[in-house]
Image 1: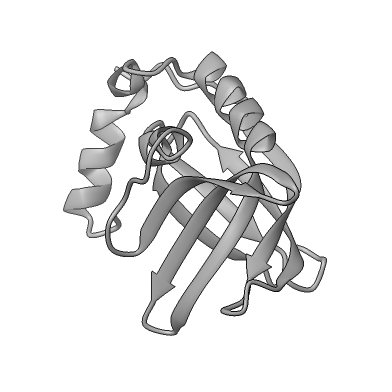
Image 2 (image 1 turned 180 degrees about the horizontal axis):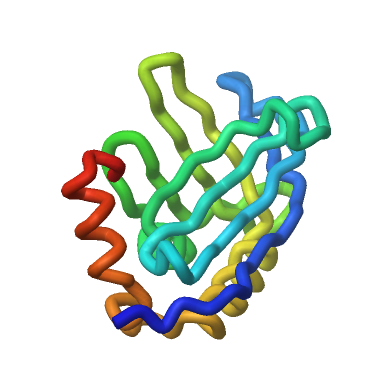
Length: 144
């Protein structure tokens, strides 16, 4: 049975897009967590500064948490701790058929985001927040 709550975590931040020569460009983004999808986090990129043309990437909350301590992930999303001249950060590497991107996120922002997400759905308790009936209906209808 689902124990879903209406609250979400949404933290706006500035990430740094890292070019091949290690020059960086600031990119407005936000980290989002919704207990209705308890295993996932979402990074929303706002390239033009508005929400109109935002780009979203969803991936495992556990992958983000583990990436604070050690390199993790394979394929499309990889995360690892990274020290830069600006301080302690987290590297987020994204790959798609359209290309690859490497982002730098302030470690404190990621830690604060995860603390708030875990206050909504504690680590290891995600399965109690999944509405299996609704998910099964969507699967059978071809909507998931």
